Length: 451
Ligand code: GLN
Image (cartoon, rainbow, N blue to C red):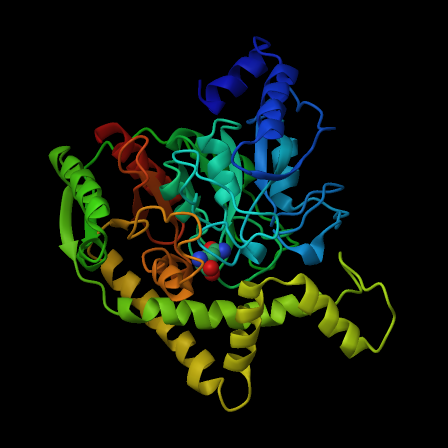
């Protein structure tokens, strides 16, 4: 039964929310794949009313939950219990859902595999010797393992879509500003958003409908509350296939994505090959910008205001260095150093400003392409899931695997990953112009129907 149908039976009184919650909590407590860093054993069943009546939801640990420990996979926030809910969590509760627990993620969302978490790696339920993708790997794995039907992730450069692809689930990165970032712990504000992760496109649409709305506490919030109900496509659409991204992918990925394209073609849609300029620069531009913003954002973890504090007193600079030295992991330290360098006097023109220019070019390139086609299609990930430990040894290789996902974050446009084949760890990514979520969800539903 889908979450939508289940919520319906709760509203009709045919299903008891406490039974649903108990089942989800049992799965979360057993947790063979290390999906959860915190399980809310005191959680009480949601209302029998609302879009998500009685639905248990797993929430990525980058999203604040009142009174429930929130660490973003970092030792530096161990013990931090936020005093407020994120906007999207407020919305979940208002629509009758219950947060069952917080899901594991790469430390401060920096990674593509959920291995940089201070609380150990998450494993892929499709094959536990593989990573689940990242950084929202705990959310993807919790859905794939069947602990929950609905989960929230966050996506700065692919962190919702990548684990969706690797765990054969659905993940949507909405238009920048569609969802409030109030209570999303920042990594790189100008790029990131919350995103729904589910087993089906229908449930993805349901979850998006529940968490939307304008929020004055986030100055970039410009969404409207809206009900999305994808049924597939009634009319043929023009789909631009970004050939360079397909061709550059591993053989298994290439095959699956080409099959999905032929199925769309057979169903009467017009799939054509397009060339996208600037793809050579997207990964470098993304990492310069993301690391620069991260170096500034993470300055707040000084051991005084949040989480891990010093045992001994001392000079502020010494305590600051010790707390950060002891509690940040290697990947986070690498990014703070590179980001600080890219912003420093004399270098910011060479790196930061150049990256901003590249970002502008990519956004213009999307505008050009969307004047010709309705949607763009590519693989979500150019590779199949790494073996556990494999990507950590080669960070550059890991960064490069973000080539298909980062363009949408640079341009602020929506993108969805849907499994090319049920149960296969290959995602088809569809991208559309700003605020084209309705079309995107319909098209993703169409991929599910024709595959
Ligand atoms: N893998 C990318 C990074 O490490 C994206 C992560 C994300 O979207 N949070 O920055």
